[in-house]
Length: 67
Ligand SMILES: [Zn+2]
Image (cartoon, rainbow, N blue to C red):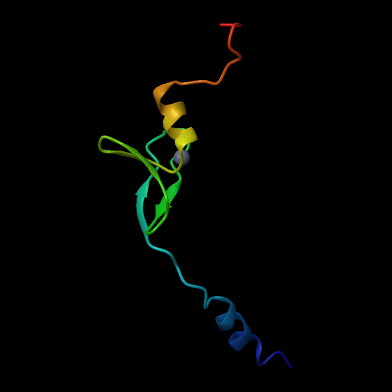
């Protein structure tokens, strides 16, 4: 009989939940930012990485000479 399943599933939920301290300012991302995570900031805004900052600013990568 599956009497021990409850104990098994409780064991799976043992993983630590990380604390969400902010969300990425880039609206199309909005990822949760966790305590201790490396992030990119500009003024008071916080982004989950530099790509989100570039996107937020409207910066794009192009080939020089084709603009
Ligand atoms: Zn982001």
